[in-house]
Amino acid sequence: MAVLLSDKPKYIDVLSDSTGETAEKVVRAALLQFPEAGVQIRLHTRVRTQEVARPVLERAAKEGALVVFTVVSPELREFVYGLTADLQVEAIDIIGSLIGRLGTFLDREPINLPSAMLPLTEEYFRRIEAVEFAVKSDDGKEPRNFKKADVVLIGVSRTSKTPLSTLLAQRGLKIANQPLVLGVPPPIELLDAPQDRVVALTIGLEQLCEIRQARLRQLGMPPETNYAMREHVRQELEYANSIFRAHPEWPVVDVTGRAIEETAVIILEHMKERDERAKAARAGLR
Amino acid sequence: MAVLLSDKPKYIDVLSDSTGETAEKVVRAALLQFPEAGVQIRLHTRVRTQEVARPVLERAAKEGALVVFTVVSPELREFVYGLTADLQVEAIDIIGSLIGRLGTFLDREPINLPSAMLPLTEEYFRRIEAVEFAVKSDDGKEPRNFKKADVVLIGVSRTSKTPLSTLLAQRGLKIANQPLVLGVPPPIELLDAPQDRVVALTIGLEQLCEIRQARLRQLGMPPETNYAMREHVRQELEYANSIFRAHPEWPVVDVTGRAIEETAVIILEHMKERDERAKAARAGLR
Image (cartoon, rainbow over all chains, first blue to last red; front, side, top):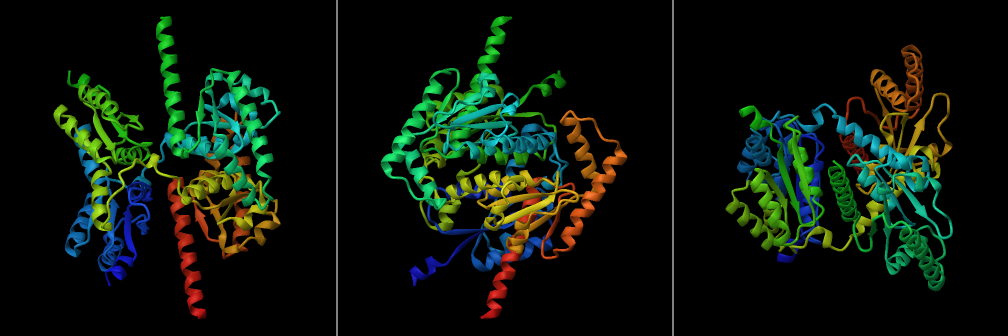
């Protein structure tokens, strides 16, 4: 019986008065600490009235679900606190106490409006534009954009250039990327671009061979013999590395075994150092 | 003097043993409730030892900064709690109590490893693949991909198709998009694709005229006369709407005045309803 009970699906109801992105992100981050817990997240977005919140909380009570919520309206927040207490549902407030403590820290009153109801900011439009720039400048399609980019990523095929570009673009950075192909010289626009904006990506031979074999299978193409694949990949990596050595001013980031999110942070750290060096150099000139 | 003091920049130090994405997202979401508070976020990523954490916390104490942290190691978390208490720094733990309460809810022990050190999951690779699919299938470049897509977005230029595609792709969904242009029939592949996967985007005439004028200025092109622009845009929207009317099975989502994040949630809600209808239909057939 105990086994049957523990096999019952566990639910987390994420309730938000906006898109629920923040709450879901926090819950998913915390759940990474419990691999294979087999818990299901149910997302309830744009919940802005007691009438909409009530049935979600009542079902959570019936099914023994955990409730995680981000609600900025103090009235609705009080309602969620009160009803979950009455129903004996465990409820976790992700943003309420943070807003309260920020109010004290900033010595201001919060405006208490769901973020989806706030006017769109300049920063928002910059992010949108950056995403469009990244998509248009993917895969070396617009070398003319290199000189307008904040970062130009270069590397052989399957070094995560595309997902890195869109991820960094969501921070408002203009990203272009250029694949390096064995024996093909990079476009002249790469050398015309500000050289301190170029970031080189590299990857271990073993992992790259694995990824490319998997890619061939996925595309329904016959796998190459291991030897042929390996030799070609080795030469292509060596070709890329020889280009990187000729440009020691380009930071080289190794993506082997790293999640996109981590590589993105390493690139941001490089950009921060670069900006600090530039600042120090300007100060030295004074 | 009081004015001078309140003009001092306020800092929030976000400290994470991983990429800091989660903590930063929560802080930015909370800060939306304090517009123009002029606070600066300093991100400290991959902080995994006391030696790295200490100087960050000491500077926060000196500068009166607020510390917000996500640290999964119980030892390092204790250290941050202890040192910030000693230094009288206000510190907010975003994920610690959530992990504790999830442990109780799931009746499991957390593994206490920073997420960046965990093995990459299948879901992670699916997301990467979806982003690559979206970038390749942007702007009607690969109509052959319509039948492989989870959602095909269609709409006239400037209805947020590109940023919506990459945002939804980050949830692991395969998204293609097709622009509608006045007088040009949509590609035949659109009608061959599963029709319950097509989502039509529309937008108000006023907002679209504004966005397109801004776009022309940005591209350094001469603005069209308001009348010519307006008349062309009106005809194009009418053309798109006539196509939508001919396909009443496509949900039409109005993006006017909506942030990408909100439109994405509305599309996800449509997909959920569609899946529930399909499920109910299958159950009815039994």
